[in-house]
Length: 234
Image (cartoon, helix red, strand yellow):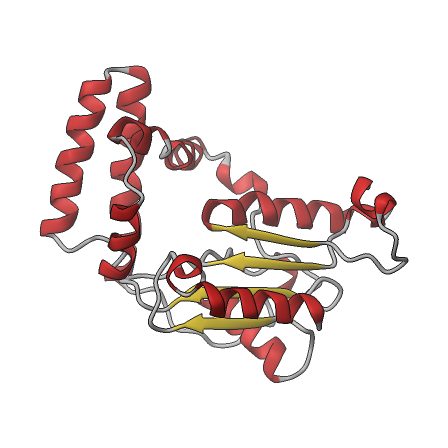
């Protein structure tokens, strides 16, 4: 409200940009405000998600294009590292910091030996260049613990986390790096956005940076910035 009120332009635009875990609250936000028709000033004009994409909205379930199915190998890669991070955080916060470090270290070794790291060296180089203290790294894994906890107690499904239902009213740009062992998106949602662009149903679109990974906005900053600026201007 404050941004729109302070704007000197009658057609001021607001674009929400979210990366990784930020896509979850970003999706919840846009879904909520689009349901509240009495608050149009809170509705973003466009949304941009980096490297994470939730499932299609429930109203789209009967109109989803064919997409590759999730493979067992991808499922194992996606689940294993999440469990390692979740338990490491749990041990650090509620049992012992030393136990948290030990479990994290053992988990990291297992991920390396079993080749279960979702990221390749292009991303690992970025992580090494921005190395944080191990205790801080484990603490920053708190979303994984709350994800696992919400799955176990059944509260996760109550949030109905998904894409927003009106892609024409609020177009969505999804950018992701293609150089990873697994992707952090739902294939159905990618196929849906690709069809939106291909058939001109909305201004939504998907951009894959094939040679970059999860941190494509670091390794290919210019391409990322150009894509975002072009989407916001058009």
